Image (cartoon, rainbow, N blue to C red; front, side):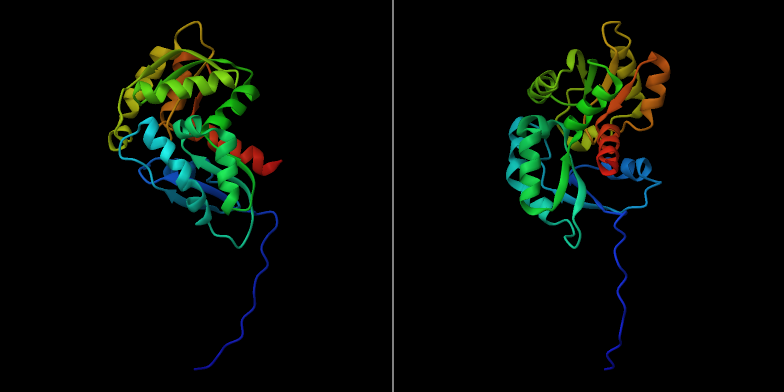
Length: 235
């Protein structure tokens, strides 16, 4: 055997990686992020976290214990400017501050965000506070979500749900169903924006059509998370 000399490239300090923690059952977040970050010069490293086949407050709360291990599986050669945790409802159950604390236990991250924290930041950026909420989930999951938004200064008195608890069905809810439901909710004159909750709900292609129909801002879990990770990465 001949041992061959090699040289090491230096890491680009301007291309610090982003980290993304995706639910085991999620089939939507990674494909949509590929589009949202198609122009990036920095890598996005992904890890998965165990998540329930059915979405309940109990299954969401269980992810609190699994977060440090999931974050610890991200490549550790470099530190992260931003790590995103891809679950809106679990963030409302666990709490954004607690999510950040758990991720930082095992991952060198300057900032940690999630769709809840990101959507609140986006709402402040757009100066909107009265949302219509479209959720795919059962009411026991929707209640803490609306409560968390209210604590962040966003009212969601107008809301609708597909009432589905099984993740494999959530990801297969048709884009047209999302468009039609969000248009109906967002047309209410008392709201000034729409929020499409859940990283597993396919929303990227729906957002432009909904916006065109109602003439109001339309946010989603994935769009908000991508936007906030970009903002945090560039500040």
